[in-house]
Length: 125
Image (cartoon, rainbow, N blue to C red; front, side, top):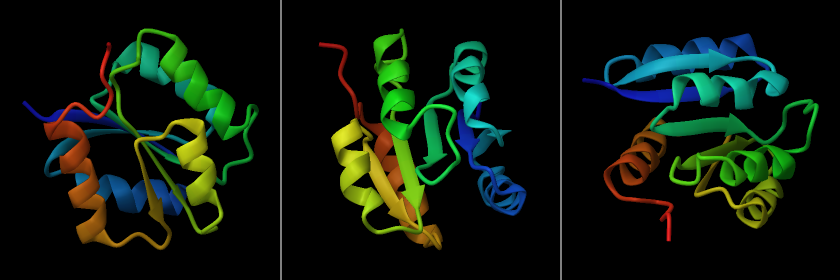
């Protein structure tokens, strides 16, 4: 059984590309609107969330990540991605498990996904 991943980015090209490269190992769900991310996570309950830190958020990335963690999703790892290197520090401050710079390095993407799905990135304690 494939692990489930929710990918959230406002670029349809990014979503399509990530879906293509991840489909072999993951059941991929793509979301293009940040306001739909929490609902998607609630209904899909993925093994991991890969989300852009650069989206035109209805809420900022901090609120999205905190909303995920405040609900029953505390154990779902979140990887944020951005073309802005400064977002790396924001992602850490918001509580993301990892950060990937855009353009994405596929080897690093696979490494971070495996790291976050094989081990418990976020403990429930």
